[in-house]
Image: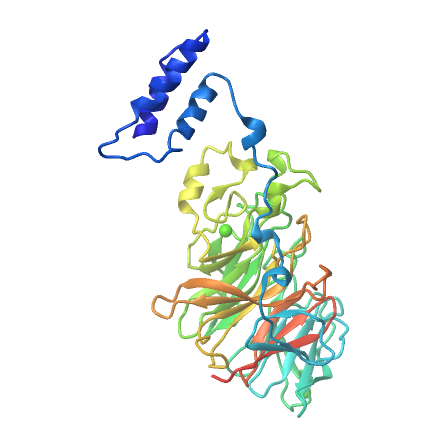
Length: 453
Ligand SMILES: [Ca+2]
Ligand SMILES: [Ca+2]
């Protein structure tokens, strides 16, 4: 209250022209707010008012009081600078940062490629290799190392998304088609392969050519991303999740406004459909960001963890993150309507982390982790400084079923800032450990506990 009185008082008084007037104004300003009976003033309490008065007169004490430099915020430091303890690394494993309570071990040789993962109840691991057009089968030995056994399928250019159904069949997406394959004699090779969604029913190719897949009872869901960065493809079949019956019939639009969701899964114990969506690039370009000086783009927009509901609209390409319009679409007459329709993320990650894929934890491998998600983040390509190369744990509130926090479990940037791995996908193995893939080292890594639950 007192400062308001001071400002009004000063602004109503013309600038003095003589030294005595100046002194009178100074004393007048200080006296206006002095109330010794109810608000005893310490000796220096008048200093801000004196400075305010000087500022009103066009005078400053800038050389003395200006900040010496812009401080470096702590969030610009890496975990290597600030973490007070670290977990464990197995032999022949890159020098990742690991959270205490966890151990990371390399468990496969370098493969031809290592993209998406699926694992069955016996521990057989499937790794998609879209460049080769194959899905590789690996099996663990007594030492925990996974050995390549066979090509489960081959000749499937762009084989990418994977999902096992309850009968043991592996569903495989290519950019414009979906297939179901089954190994009937246990040799790691599929003997029965059937095309469920042939080419022609869904868009293919484009900048985001990969397709997710999850099978839920007698239906399946697949998502198709933006062909570019922020293309207006409202009237196309892109930027959407589609639902089909598992016999390939019954194509139905499920949700829209996605940019690039590469994996879909149901949250265990529910019918909730979840996916991680990559935020768009160059958010700050319209504001003047340029490569190398891109402060807005560096921090916007967030990557998203979305709970996709039927009929839901998730904003892209017009609205990002927590319902913020992109500059490019501000002139649209319906921008506020679009914002009003947008379902914001259930959880947000850092900008450009490339939150690629995830798995839910269904076991008690670590205390209080059941129901949480581990998210494989590929890491940034167009930030000024690398960020997001990691496996992130998203904690779910056990009472509400909503995300309530997240922590880095494994960081794959080295102490010197070099890139050690780019995580792509993760799965929970039958023993409760978490396996994650990397498409630069082309290996599989396992996360195990160092403390028993
Ligand atoms: Ca076979
Ligand atoms: Ca969104």
